[in-house]
Length: 329
Image (tube, rainbow, N blue to C red; front, side, top):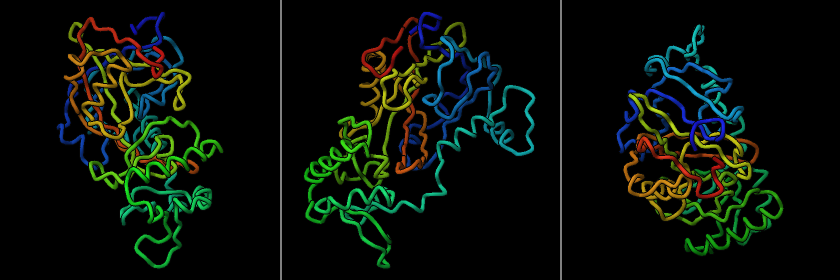
């Protein structure tokens, strides 16, 4: 995964004057925030800065971003003003456009109604997608607006009492919907369904189905960097073309969803080994530095994701190695 023309993984040269400017506790709050990215960029390629590295296509085999000075929140506010007219590479209009894309669809939010379990809102379902669920009335019940506090809403059949039973029967419905191509990309990986992070789990849901039920999904993302001659270099992965989401695009060195039954820190260690061959003796030094949350509505999909962010300083001579089929190089 060296940064040269023979490999498709790049290192990005950056300056991180405030790399760890978030408290560890900030990574586990329900606040929406975007981690400070304190870098002024001078671009040496045609690639564009994006809200998430996942959304950046690769145009060349080697990309280098060279920092010139620190970029602060004062600069963020300054360049976000309508009257701002950039004359240098600190222009972040493209960056803010990507943020808008990550939070698109608010104008059709009214087409979704709550998904309720035990009087708790756990998600949101599009009214037309819900029409496909009505034939499974032994599992899902649609309630019209009768003046209650939830209005029209979707809920599970009251006969389904336990988390295991709910997981099993909802899973059977998801399998049928997958076969009808209503829920593409079935992964056979379960996400916990809760009202808030850390709350009791009502049941577990197939990962690919999460946005169709609007449940809040969680993941971990990690920057891996090395220091050489007083400079910091960021390792970047490229996603394989067979991934169902964002194929062939740039990615963090390590990233993954947070499945049922594993803590964030332990999940980072697991993903480090699986995606980059980073041993526990190194990965257990990863530091939580913040969280990013967003709401993305597209068609029947209502993504409400929270990404817990980590930084890991790697040994200067360490070279990440692909261990699975998530990262191509």
